[in-house]
Amino acid sequence: MSLSRALLMGVLALGGATGAHGQNESADGADPSAVSVPTLRTTITQRHPADYYVLASRLFGHGEKDEAVFWFYAGQLRFRALNACHPEQASSGGAALLSALQSSVGQVMNEYIGGYPRRWAATIRQAIAWDETNPDGPETDEACADAVAEQRTGARDLSDRIERSPDEIRAQRTANGLPNFEEAD
Picture 1 (spheres, rainbow, N blue to C red):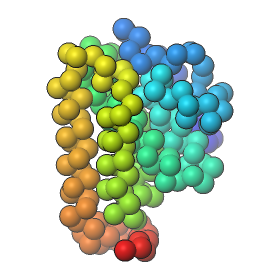
Picture 2: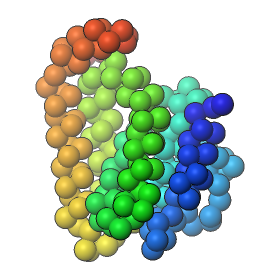
Picture 3: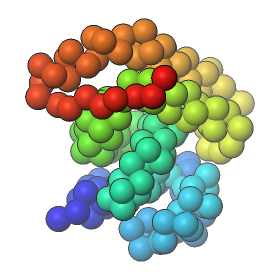
């Protein structure tokens, strides 16, 4: 079973990606696994953050790994902001869905990008910049401004830690049997 198919089954098993208030419901209501990748890219801001994980998984499966990691982090940022802003949704399945996505898609993305610490940190910063310039969902809700800012700060902190610790990251990956890759200066 492909990663994107397993992901979709998980989303459906948890009752779909929309919350009680329809927050970030996909504009067209289309199953993200049935929508073309180009269409997902162009409609992503009208979709639930879980769809970002589907896009990331599909791109990764097509060998577009760096773009996949970007969409993974953009989706993670938006999903965490959504859950922080709407705790009633988080407690009714949003947190479980995010956890499942992080455990499945996140593991694949992080095992890949962790081999390139500088690229990893830069990709997280790119996802934050994209999120700031492509508002949707919680970002457009004034009441959610603090939750969104907190999630962006957390992502910046992660990027900074990665950037400060490339040798430690490489050593830990080696200890865990994961490959490290050369990065151009």
